[in-house]
Length: 528
Image (cartoon, rainbow, N blue to C red; front, side):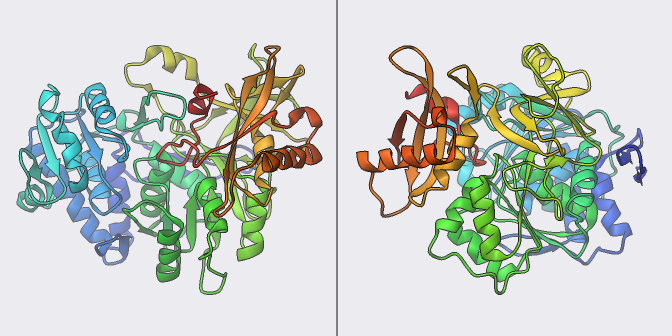
C-alpha cells in the first residue's frame, strides 16, 4: 500500500494527502518498521511491553485468525475488550484483512451489548475474559453471530484468541481497500440516548494523527502517551492508537477504571510526557488527598476533552503542576479533536480555536451563519468526518449536512477567534427571554470550595417558566443542608447575572455519566 504525504500551505489549511488505494492498518504498522522502530516499544500494558515488530506480528496473526473463522472482507467483528495489547492487535489485524472492527463500550450491561451485536450484525465477537459471561447470556440467540472468541483460554462455547492466533500465519497481505471505504465503527457514547453506529473511513485515523496529534500537540517518537479515555471511545482511539502509531510514540494502556489512585500510580511509575483525561477526572484528582506534586513528573501536555473544562479546574491544575491543561472539543462523528487550546495561545474558559485543517461555523435555528458574540450551533468541516450512522438515515441526514457536521453544541466566538462553550443544543435554557448556558452556571458552582461536581438542567416553576436546576456532588466529608444550598445560590449570584442562579439545588451522590465521563443530562431532566 502507498504511504502518505503531508502538504503544508501558508494560506490554505495544512492537508494530508491519502492515496486512493490505502489500508489504514498496513500504513500504521509498516511505517514504523520502515522507520527502523521494529525493536522500539509500541505499547506498555498491565502485562508487559511490546515492540512495533511484535505488534505487527500479533496484528497479522489476529487478522489471519479472523479470516480462518470464515469472516470475509467488509464483514464486521465486534470488539469488547479492556485496554491492553489485544485491542490494537485485533483492531489492526481486522482492518488489514479488510474486516471492519466495531468497538463497543466494555461497561454496558448484557441487554445493551446484545442490541449492539444485533444492530451491527457482526459475524464474530472478541471479548475480554471478564466480559465473557455477559455475552454468554445472549450469544446463542443472535443469528448473525457465528463465532464468540475470548481473549484468554477457551471457555464454554467461546474459542480462544491466543490459541487461534498462535496457529495462524505471521504474514498477512493487506486487503485491497481504499481511503473512503468503511474501516471501523465506533458506537456513540449514549449521552443523548441510544448509541449510534458511526462509520469511519480508512483515511480518518491518520488525518486526526496529523492535524491534531502533530500540528497541535507536536507528538514525536520520543513521547510516552497515557490516555485515561479507553480505546473503545473515539477520544481514546485517537490518543492511544492513531497518535502513537502514526508518529512512532509509545502508548501506555490501563485496563482498570481510571480512578485517581490508578492514574497517580502510573504517572509516577512510567512518567508519560502526554496525558489525556476528561474534566471529571481532573476535578476528582485535584480533590484527592493523594494528589502528587509536580516533582518527578515529566508531562509536557495535559489534555482535556469529552466536555468543557471548567476554567477554575484548569487554573488550579496549572497552578499545582506548572503545566497548563489544553482543553479541546471532539466528537465520535469527527473521530477526535477539531477545536483546541494550544501552548502559547491558551485561554481558560474557552475551547480554543479550530485545529489546522478544520473549519467551524456557528449557525442559528434557521441556518444563518452568525458573527462574533452570537450564540449558535457549532458545525464542523474537516478531513476526519464519518460517512454516517449505520442503518439510521433520519439521524444521518440531520447530522451530516454535505461537508458540514452538526456538533449539537452551542458556542459563542469571541472577537479574537476563541470559542466559548454554551452547552448542548438541547441543554440551552431561555430564562426571562435570555439564553443561559448551563455550563456557565456549572462553572460558577464548581468554583465553590464545597463542590466536587455540578450539572445544571432546565426546570419549570409554578408559572411554567424555565429556570435552572442544579444537581451538586459535594466533596468527601461534607453533608447536604438547606443552608449549604442557599450558600451555593448566593455564590452563583455573586459571580453571574442574578437571573442565572439555580432556583433549585439538589444534592446527589454522583452524576449519571457515560463510561467516557460525559454527563447524561437527559437522565437528570427525567428525574426532575
